[in-house]
Length: 240
Image 1 (tube, helix red, strand yellow):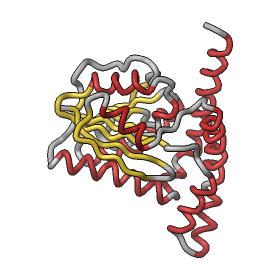
Image 2 (image 1 turned 60 degrees about the horizontal axis):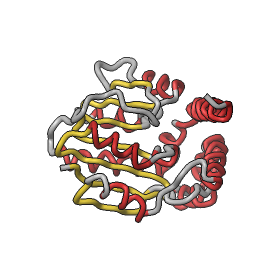
Image 3 (image 1 turned 180 degrees about the vertical axis):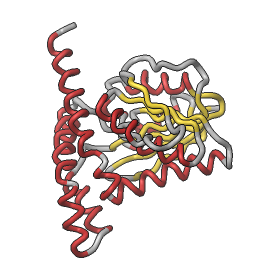
């Protein structure tokens, strides 16, 4: 394996393992993150209509979406390539019966599931880290049943710390503003590094039109596209 690829993989694992230490500050303090979680889970519940779905959470991180969906009675499998993220996800299951299944997997490789395994697939702010978007979505389609729901969120342009702070500022008041922003300082540092990689092309944001093209070319229809989170775009539709 070329030395440059080895170094890149080493950096990637180091970065996301370190980010895991402060990642859940987003869930505790960052309103746009909390709102997006509820938005995505709300769409799942509308689709489920009381059914218990088997859901794949691709790039599950510390398991926030997986845990929320599991609490609603769904059978969730979360996959990620960061051992530290997965360790924190597993810790959230302690003291409770059942819960999501968390698995380690390189998201740039074949998923460890048979065809037609899931009723719904969510992929939240992960796509920009994947070099081959088309191949990645084809793999998600392979493991999804017919019909199934797909929800994908990705940044539409390099992350802006100024925009992120402005959104939180507008959603909070008084001393709460200063407290939450100070609690999010470490998260902001990691997101500056993500933004730099997006600007250099190492990570790939997707415009609304690009998200639409990627999903429609892989058979997602009908399809809804709208802006969400911090300079993000959400695509939702059905594989039939």
